[in-house]
Image (cartoon, rainbow, N blue to C red; front, side, top):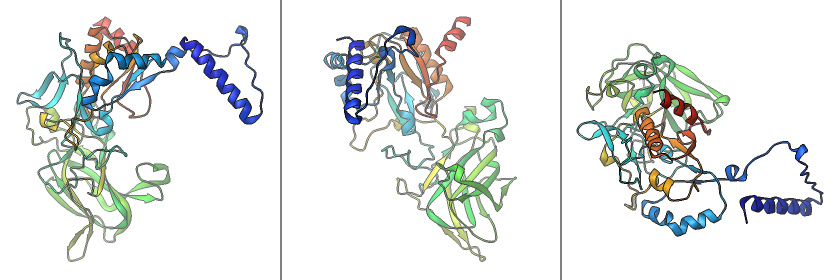
Length: 405
């Protein structure tokens, strides 16, 4: 039975069931001149390949398994890139080059194909993350903003700074949010800055009934009475935010100008010297005799007080390869060569993602260059995995630029 025949049977069955359930008549008009729209089932009905346990990849892509999948009649296949959901840097090609000659930093996969096929690729946890949790994704990561360790720190993504955008940093403010378990009085904050620190920033609190992150139409951020800082000095800043405490559940630090001083990774790479970095946050109340009471729970796990951040620096090291609690390597993004040559795409152009939130533009360009050199057919390129829920189709413009250069 062909795909078109299967679809016809499915349509007829649905129509029959609908008629029985609601006692209605359904009329199908197949007059060619009455066609309103058309679609090709082979391209309209598809499926996806997602992250799988590394020890199951070879089994999943075994020829007999692929044969079973092909018989299901799916058309276009989309490659889901899951590392963005895990706050990880994706090594789409295990072979590549680190920015630091010592073998760490920012990784760019090798864009030149070799005789060796890419069968596996993995995610690397980011040591400078500021998220306590990942929107429901099961993962044992935690924020560095309140992990109780002053040697660790959160750092924002350097690619969102003027050095790379060409625009003033105030147009792309970075922020961190503290989410308390429940509303509580707040009039003081202590920020243990790392390098680079914020010279200009505001400390704000949330006013409204809704969730400050998910229901922003139900409230607004308001600056604390003494929350406007124009001459930040770095170090550990203890700020009295007002004479009276404000009761709130959410507090935000909004940063608009950086010191542009270099972080713990040194001055050899300019990406180490832009953005913002914080070692630890403390939030609560300060009495008139300057006794500070901290509301936050500091711990290197998800029991810490919840924090969120605007971005994360994708700097990492080989030791950050994610290993699941059961010690099995978890999160194998099947290698592109395995994906395209296994038969699962049936030779049709696939939808391919590039990592966006926790990677570098250089790595995304290298990935698509590799795929093009291999001659693999691509229909669309997805910018990250669900950063806005949309697929961005710029493969045609990529090819035009390639021809010009």
